[in-house]
Image (cartoon, rainbow over all chains, first blue to last red; front, side, top):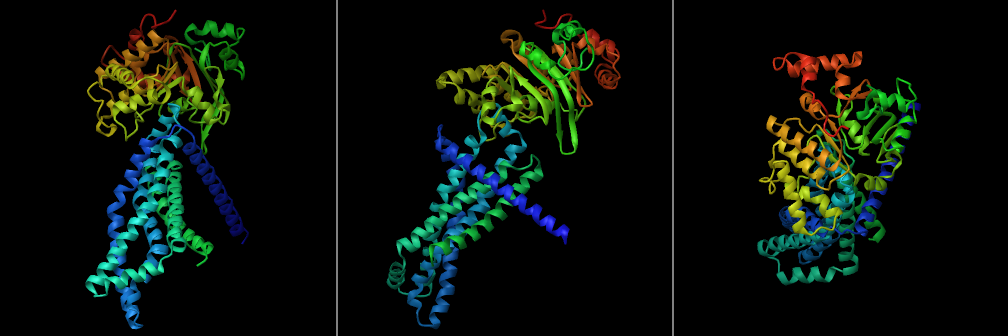
Length: 258
Length: 307
């Protein structure tokens, strides 16, 4: 019993230490981003890597999720004779919840893991130490642009995901199942409020972008300089990033006041 | 031969006079005194360093004289690369001091270290070039970051350095497209492009063909002679080490034995005997006759730059 309590205490202390280091790292990134030099070219490259290269997976997933939602929603709504509200149901679900959450999970798996692996392999091959020996701060040169890029691309990819999901829902609902296109868009437009839905969606995407970017760069930056270290950084980013996104989604939703 | 930050190119005589005639291990503070007098550009004093349960250095004391080539030798795992990382401030000693250009870098913050590192160039064992940048951009990086040079001037300087290491045709390639030896040569070009005072080279000859060993050897010697650079090189390449070194530093059992090459080769110190016997017989067997005699015969009559 005592041993179990000791282990619990040890784990708690480790967790607090980790959180402290993560907060310090976060502050360090914010400092390097706020102060010159501003590495615009590197930022553009990172936005391309994290954003443009994620377009295909985000758009395809969005369209598929929208199509499935429309199919499921149509079946349920038909029971109550409310199939005309399909646009509203799909819009609500996508804009407030599924859009930001699924986009964040997809981007964590594709771009976040790649980011962590790249930084971890730079640790393994002394590239970050090489920068330090040239008096170049690796947080400024490597980490900052990556973290900021993730913050920038997440809301944009979220918007694209939602747009493609609505397109998928429209295609299934209107083109395949024969709903009226006008009703679909009228119910969608009537039920979506900017402050409640769009702003919440955008806020979630920004928070998820920052958290995923922070975790990916932190995991890579603090990885062991071994192949196993690269592997752990990548896996850790996906696992911790995904769970963090889901937990934060609940917290933001609860604080926003459903 | 001395143990610790010893005689440099001046041999045992100057060590003894510096210590008032005492022989044996250096006491804490003595290296500092010499470093303050600028005898050594780099001086470690009583450095203790461990990784996990393993102690790499147990009170390591050694010095690297200004403007000279010091070659660090030792078996695998003896801490050669770690020594360079301590000097570069990439690792922190558990205790003891590491003085570089007069500053105890073990007490500096990371940001303060950047100022000191501006005087140091380092070649890593595998080059440590940034994967995402071309060879040209890798070598140009320190100039772009720390100088106000215009791009044409940077380009000219980078091409001059790449030509010096024989990579003039590789400037557009990415590090992943280079061989191990080419990576190291590009890393060397990057390490010296800002003309630092101190250059640390971790195994610069490893994996190079004989032509390129000679090329890099000549380049380093030229830099040392022309610019008076302090070079600290770790190596397994005994012939190059003996040709180039003003001073050898052997890492043995967590401590250092240092001195001019001839003196160390003739030493009867049992800690050196095993390492030297194996290395020298392997290197010279069948070439100029076995072992020590051939090694001594290969030593230059007067080290480059020696007074």
